[in-house]
Image (cartoon, rainbow, N blue to C red; front, side, top):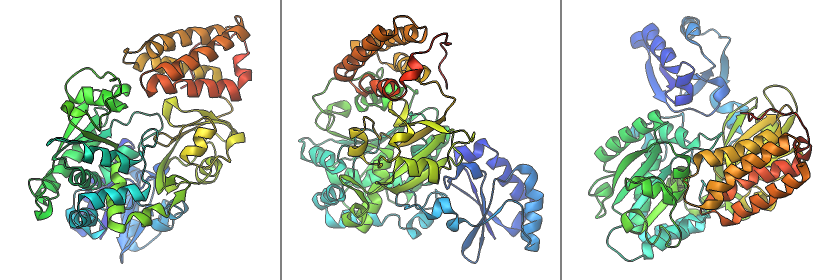
Length: 513
């Protein structure tokens, strides 16, 4: 009997390690305990899966005190109160289209054999067979766009680096996941790290880079350990090293740990940190694709972008591009968080509406109160009211609605939220996290806090709202990077859709968290 227990940080946080240890003690040699990633149904963690005749049956959430009864039920073939049935048939999983996360929660993350048996390595083999130019063409034709920010086409970025002159080039994986309500990067690094290794190896081969770096924030110790372990395993299987799968191309990989500065999620600040300096935004041009890490042409991609590459190369560009809508092709791993009944990771093609995600998939609020606002795209994302729930999850549709998809974190708030306080929190967040290089971000965010405080206090409300609007325009168009440039999104959307919260008096000044 094989029993699967997640070693994912979210599951560990609610006792998965203790449950796995107890199952091992109780069952002894009668079962093999396999530590996997998470399936992404976080309300069921720790989720225990038992394999019978090739099918996986779930139990969850399983507490340490539930283990003896669960073992007795397994031995006697009886039911257990936490029994869920076939895991693949659970509605939250069955309705997904898992391309990037197909192996997450299914395989042992450090078994090359299991990885290959579930479709891994096929993408790298095909890339090596068709050559660098054809590999870049596949990525470009797939329609894959950046999964961490503005959605820039990945294939164009790769082509730019491939065409740049010079014998030394780099691949950098931006794993500095810091947006509120996001955890997809961490999940795939802990649950399917070899996919990231393979995606980076393919990128390195296609642009002529021999070295890659994975930049992970220090708050992710489980992911750091998982990626380091996966690199060693991959090296032993010749997925890394002087000769990729026996080819003439070599590629090496190294994990670098950041100190947790939010601004280091911006690609040029990340490069500064990688080079051993203070994380501070660089002026562009030159673009990193021309002058990047150590002054060399550099591909910088998000974890989810690189994680999608093995599928694209293995199955072909069309198989990926057939999903989605408009210019948003493929699938997006969407993270449902905040005040929501069924929080977790939901991978689906672009085009699903925001309302379907929040109400149908997420089940509405955990509190049972009406949804008042949904923030998409992290702490710099716009707040959408229910009147915009028909907005399709698509880069252009969100831009037209005054928002951004970003890293696809969806954070839900019920009707008890005070949106003036949330606007203040956005300015406060920017002030704390600013690198200080440009005036609109450094000074504008501090002045923004002061202006919102006056509005909340009821002092010259209309004049201060006009001043806040003007300040947001300056920050949006005058900041060097997206930290200052996107802070106006949550502020102005709160002001636009929830104006009544800015016209009250006698409010406290602490932001709602």
